[in-house]
Length: 337
Length: 195
Image (cartoon, rainbow over all chains, first blue to last red):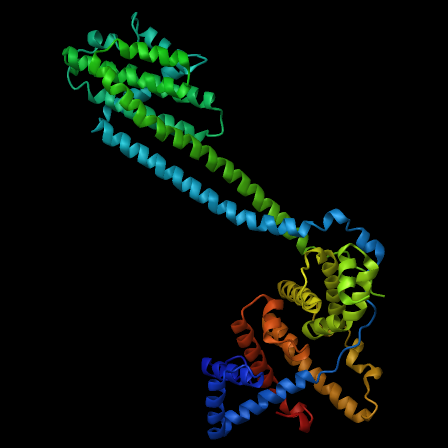
């Protein structure tokens, strides 16, 4: 008996499919002719066909079952589903479609965000050249200090951090005097490379904040970047040219912070800082600004977009789930009478 | 009123108009549900829910065959109920009043058919129904739509939302399994019904 049903081979199923379609006249003329030729030659196959035909006939002959009662809808049962509830199915369908779509959109947006972020970091790395690990520690040590300063705007962070270093001119002036020795290029370079990265990370973590808030959170690392120029002091050269370069980088860092803050005052301040430098410094600065800000803008926009999409997606899935739960619930039941 | 006007009125929320459609189709809907579910109580529930659901989603109905629309809703209702039952198999089939067996309905006795033949037919119908209930839901619904309701492959494909090829293979498997089942019950079948 168990051989009869339960274990049916693929061959049997293929055969049954052919026979079943034949019974319904669903085979092409060519298939039908071929099967009829086989049936004429193969009594076993003919017997299978007959058994199948009789089975179908038995099912077709099943007597109709009389309805036990009328299934007319009571007025009040339908009234309980007001007109406002009726357009709902269409809405549900739309939401059911929206949830997967939004999921895909969120995925694409976050992927883009990661790509842009990676691109920014890679390009920043390429721009700045080799990384020196030591200043990183210095940055970490100094950054909190700058961050602790109770300041309202990024621009002031920069300014006051500089003021602490004690000098009339902004950021850059202390450098020639305090940091007079070799390999200085690497430290500021790292500082600048780190600052954008940190700023980007901060932005990534809190993309929902207003731009102003973003800028002020981004500012401390940038401000922290400027003071780093000091630690390499013992190894630094006295070369005024190098020192000037160092200063330029510091100016750039300050400038970045200013750009982030989008504050006129900050820009003016940073501009003053760079104006204090030689012409070559002025030449390189706009280049740096132009190279970095589009990335940053893209990161901020994509970050916000991803977060927004993510929230909407979660909301959409919740709605879809609720809708399907509601669907699954039985409509008002009526006592059989 | 013809069917189109009734549908139109029902789409406006007129329950009376819809109830005329209920009366016209309840026999077919109940039969489909009964053959798929295999017991009167479940068939009753599925039928009632199918009509309520059909009324509620009627504004979405965009022409075409109203019968197919109803059958699709009913088949879906059966499918959901079978899945639910599979998840929580609480009551056995025997618990659903055997004594309510509607094939025992005396009204079904064909005038030209003696009581013995009627009893025989009942027995066969009972066995076939038992065979249908051994089939998995997809195949069961396909077989009932095709061989009890007389739907075309195309109509079944639309009602169950699958391709023609899937209909073809589900139907073949269902028929093949039912044939094997009836063979296995061979000696219980009256001689003239044996395969």
